Image (cartoon, rainbow, N blue to C red; front, side):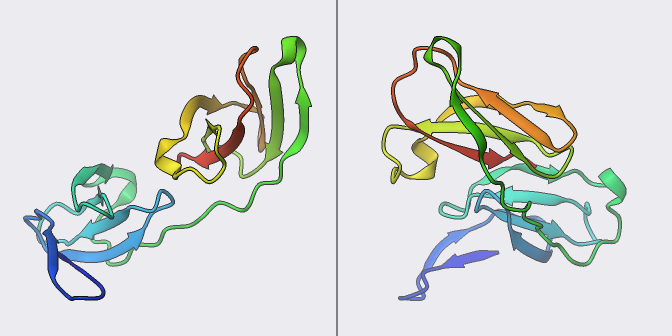
Length: 153
């Protein structure tokens, strides 16, 4: 697979793949997911959208019923709505939201809301307190900053 500049059409990168890709999709993290065909190990690999570097295996060969797959679809979780934002004990910030049961989320923070997503600090996982309901409480004494939530599925 090759990556080209959209304006100049110059070759930017070659993804080191031993097998032909069957399908591609953009993941929730903005990177490229590639399904490799039946003639080799039927698996899905993740590649950095900007550099073309292999990030790892998203679905291993034969895992989760993956066999003879011919298409790939990335499904975004529904938008979440922040509920009950509050200042908790000792000044800690807390919030809750609802989403699809079983999803995994990470809380992120930055002092500048317009900072690039990859520069936000990882505050840790957002626990699912009961099916479909998630709640996060930041450690007390944190500096004033913006928070966001990212899906890990």
